[in-house]
Length: 220
View 1 (cartoon, helix red, strand yellow):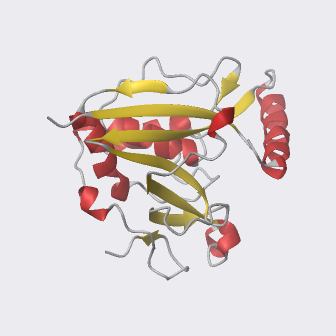
View 2: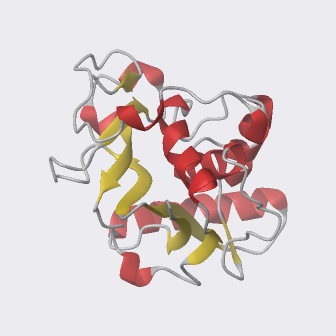
């Protein structure tokens, strides 16, 4: 009988990277001031998926920060401005890395959170990956009230795959920008009852179409 498990990890924004950490603090300071609230710690999320003896790391990150050629890229999208997407500096990638490792996982907080232990919902997470909307990172193009980023990937996948997220929260005293955007778009896409695309046959590729002028899907 097939077995499955989905684990959620919360990593401090900028773990292992000084520049991202500083920029995150500046962003949060401005956001907190505009919202009239106290500053909070910012978190980035990632998944580790176990299915029938295989293990996959699912995350989103800049195309230039993971040099391993076997990291299994599912697709790419623009960062900040679509007009800059021809440059590798302004593109992100969605990864489903077989036997990969979450960067700086040793710094994860209140993790892992075990979200499921059945093969059906676990397999659906993998099946949905090729359908993830490759919107512009850091921008609210879809009018959700929240930016689109790596947390949007994780919340979108979990919501679309039918996981109960009612009790899922970032670590105490923290928040995860982009999480709500993923939930809103997942509901628009039909929630857990929405259609599933190409499925796991698309996984395992480690390259994308070499056309940097648009959002990219893996070449099959």
